[in-house]
Image (cartoon, rainbow, N blue to C red; front, side, top):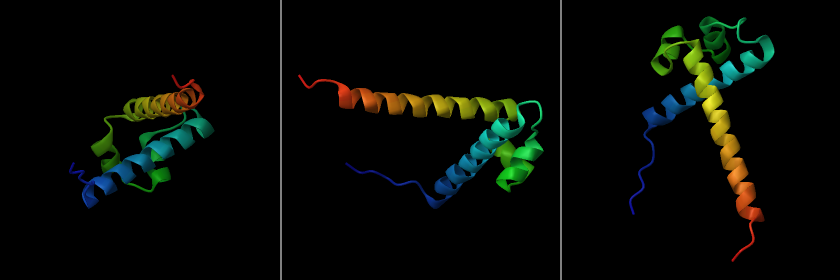
Length: 89
């Protein structure tokens, strides 16, 4: 089985996307939906507006992506806990 690792470019792209999502999360919690802008997100992530638009089409897209990732993480945690607590047959 040949498992290929992500290229340097792919790793940087993922790191940038994570920074934008983390900045969105932090601002959403601190300021609320209406108070934040794309400029706030990019300033917080220390990235340019153009970089934001490479990853997301608008603020709502970034927020929905954040919510989807939070739900996926919650599902992974719950599956892990359920798997450990299920009796072995």
